[in-house]
Length: 301
Image (cartoon, rainbow, N blue to C red; front, side, top):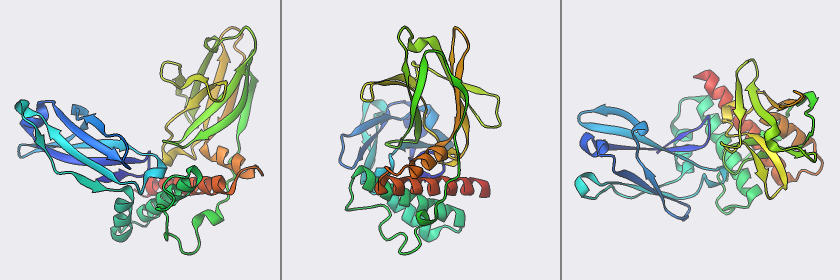
């Protein structure tokens, strides 16, 4: 198992099959995380990495949330080639096992810093979400001088176009149960519908806009919050400091609302809020260190 560190938290499982078995298209991976219900993942052509000496190497990515870094991951592969079942051995591992190995063997200071930052973020996320707190990912990681103690965030949001007729943006929330997602909640005046507006965003220093739609789930209605939303989802760790401009435009009169923001901007808002709990503040500081470490790792490689 390998772990993609500078984007989303993906465990990468590598396997090798004879070419005939792989091309048969009947190969599956069976995965259980922390004793949860077993998942079945179909091995597809897009997972192929290389072919040599009659074998195909392929990689299966499995996205994990930050509270699962110490969770037991059990997996095995099955090939149904020629209607016969061929099973691999069953394996057990954790993301922390991989991270501990990197810390002990990597010659790259940036990679070690990144792995430690990921474990620290995972541990503080476990505390905040109250998940498996007797086996924290960051236990003993920093006996002294925890990097979160020196975190200072200066990123500020900038609101441009102040209003789109009939629509009011109320709050911005950061969701971390999976990969970082910034969600913007809004309300509509009477007579207006969600489809009366367009929603899009672009990254800083870019003129390319990406549309947000109800079809892909980036625009919708949150039954729990009781509000409409649009969101920028799955923000990689290396881009959490990258600012983007989100825009909502009224189709009828072209009035619009824009906000220039980033994950770091949200973190600053939360840390400046006196009502933010210590557990949440610690998790967000650790997330910030994880993001800056991911950026440093990318820049060094």
